[in-house]
Length: 174
Length: 327
Image (cartoon, rainbow over all chains, first blue to last red; front, side, top):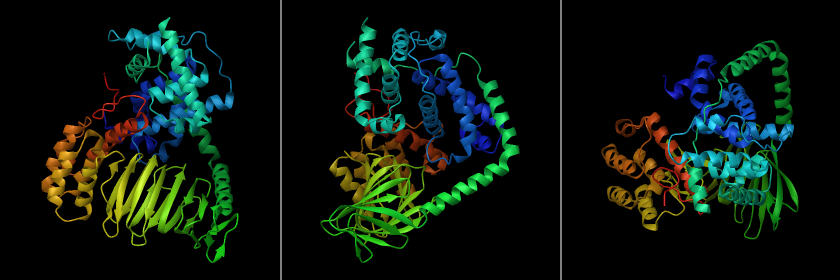
C-alpha cells in the first residue's frame, strides 16, 4: 500500500483510486464519529458518505499544516453538525442503533460488554448533550471549540457535558 | 458507576467502527455526478466566484475598523474617540492608558494593549498583515492557516488558526504566548511552532528560541534561554536533556533541529525515551532531519500536548502516549 502522504497527493490530483484507498483507510474512524454524533446507524451511513463527498471537493485545500487524519476529523465534525443545523430533523431515538452488530464487531476483550452498553447509553442521550459529550470526552475538543462548532455558549457546553455524564452514570447503573 | 469509572469506560471505546455495509459505491456515484456537472458549469461558476471575490476584495480593501476600548488612541496624528478606520500604511498608537480593538477584516480581532505601536501593512481577502513595532497585542483569528501575519522587529508570527499574545520591544526582544490553535514564528530560516499552552522567547537577530510549555520548570526554561541566546550551548544541552519531562517533548523536537549534528543522536534518544516515536519514524530519519520523520513525530507530540492541555483537570493523561492514564 502506498504511504498515506502519497495517497493524499494523488487524490488531490484527481486520482479516484487513491481516493478510494483513503476512504478504506479512514472510513472506520469517520463512521464511528458519525454514529456517535447522530446516535443512528442510517444517519451515520449517510453522513459518512457526505463527509467523503465533501472531502473530494475540499481535498485540494488541504495543505499539510496539520495531520491529514486531524483535518479530515474536523471536516467530519463540521459536516455532521451542519447537517443537523440545516435540516433540524433530528428526532429522539428510542433504539439507538438499528445495527447493534456494528458495535458487536469490535468485540475483543472482556471490558467491551461495558463499551457496548456505553455506546447505547450515549446514543440514547438527548441530541445536545450527546454532541457535547462525544466531542469533549471522546474526541478531546475543548469547550471553546465546541461552543464555536455547535453554535452555543461555552457555559451551555459545560452544562450539557455535566448533564450527559450524569445521565450516562444513571443509565449504566440500571 | 462513578465519574472515574465512566472516564475509564470512555477511554476504552474503539476509535474506529467499520460501517455495516460498503459505502464506497454511493460515494463514487455522487463524486462522478459532481464531476460531470462541474465540467458543464465551470464557466458560470468561475464567473460567480470571480464576482464574489471582487466584491469581497472591494469591501475589505485597504481599511479595517478600530474601536477604542480605553483612553484615546492615535491613528496617525488623529486622536480616536469611539471608533475609526485603519488604512493600509496607517499607524495605530496607544499610550499608557489607552487600548484599542482592531477588526482583522472578517477573520478575527486584535486587541492593542497600552504603550503599543502597530501598522496596517496588507488588508486583502487573501492576506491580513500587521507590523508590531513595540508593545503587546492579543490576537484571535478564526480562519484557515496562513491568512494573518504579524511582523515584529525580530521576525513574523504566522497564524495557523489560533489565539495568542505577542509582545515585543522596539529592538525585537519579546515573547509569544499561544492560548489557542497554533502559531509559527519565523525569522529567516529559523522557525518555531508554538501550539496552545506554549510560549517562545524572541530575540533580535536570532529570532525565536525553543518553545516550551506553560508549566515547564524554571530551570528548564533558563537552560533553553541559555542554549538559544547565550554562550555555553553544550552545557545548556546537557541541562535541557536532564531536566526534560515527557510534557517537554515539543521543546526537544525543536532542539533536535538546532543542535550541532554530533549532538542530534543524544537529543533524539532522550526524546524517544520520553515520548516513543510513532510507527514509521526512524532514528536515522530523524537525525538526518528528514521532513517525513520530523512531521510524523510532531503530529504525535502535538496530539499528546493538545490532550494534556485541554483535558487538564478533567482526565489524567499519560504524557508519554496521550491516552487516558490508568489509576
